[in-house]
Image (tube, rainbow, N blue to C red; front, side, top):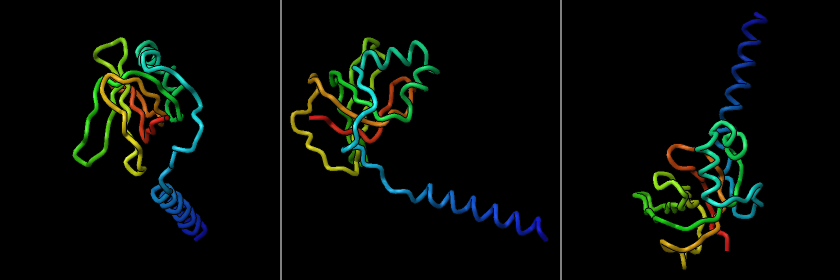
Amino acid sequence: MKKVLALILVGLVVAAGVWFYVNKGHEDVAGEKPELSINATELVKAFETNEQEANKQYVGKLIEVSGKIVQIDLTEDGSVNLLLESDNPMSTVLCQLDPLQKQDQSGISEGREVRIKGLCSGFTTDVVLDRCHIIR
């Protein structure tokens, strides 16, 4: 009987944890201070040189990245992705602008320098930053 009660208790704790994780609010990073500042070329180079070390240093952190916009993509769901140039023509920093926050996108165009902060989620062929905000 004690084992059954213990299992039920463990199940309730796990279920509560999952519920809180799934229902946690959207984290607004607009007002947060970045932990690190780096330019796009250096960030890509860090991941290409030693991805494991770069993961430890950048993934999950709010970072500020500066660089030149080489491409602007509008996705089907209406969100905007900015790709920042690096020395490697096959890799960029992919900045996914936060779709839940209204942002002034005036003056944003290909070829312009920009400063963006966002949460680093890792490296595929591009370094990916989520929930990005343009720094003015």
